[in-house]
Image 1 (cartoon, rainbow, N blue to C red):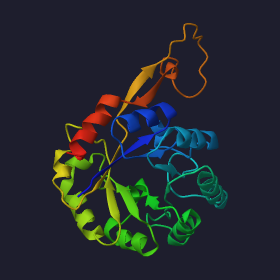
Image 2: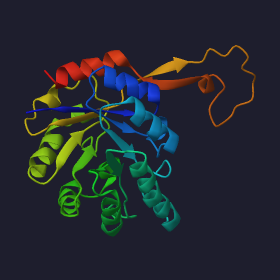
Image 3: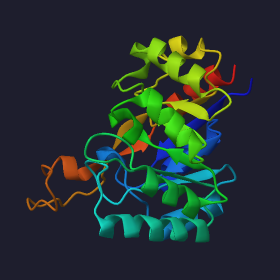
Image 4: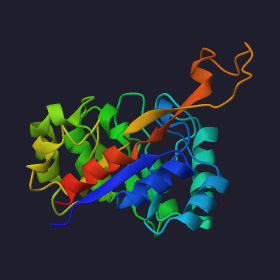
Length: 246
């Protein structure tokens, strides 16, 4: 069985770290700190120029929930067009209704717009009402994989749930597990023989070299937080890759 490690990144530097340290694929986004939103056209284009591994692109118009207005959904469809134009190898997205079920007509439109690229349902799945019935619904409309932490913050704490989903998914689609995966906690998930795909971010802070900082915030963070950002940590990527590909 060939296992796959996908790294979720929101910068070109993190994408380069992912490729250099054993990732098989990246999910590209912006603003990973708030769960990720759609990356810019320039970021997609440049990452595709620098990387040889596949680049899946997140289509998410904003942070927070997955219940979208008509205008937001129109933007999602346009962003799929943009991602395909700049060379995306796959699309990652998802839409829910207010009751926690998947908005299947809209999901079907997203899958159709992504064609012929593979479509991943992202962690909207972890907020859905009934993951086991929705797994079948998503498979029926052509979703190729589901990203999930088993509806729990830490997937390694619920291996039984992940195993149930992976077994149900066999011959239908792939389950890609996520949820704070690190080299020292992934072992329970590696024991699940039906599980082939793993997804992680493994972030650490990077600090600004600015000397003149001032006291005016540019957003809703404190000044000290505005002079640091997060990047993927190469040693943790390699540690995950070594375990997953052993």
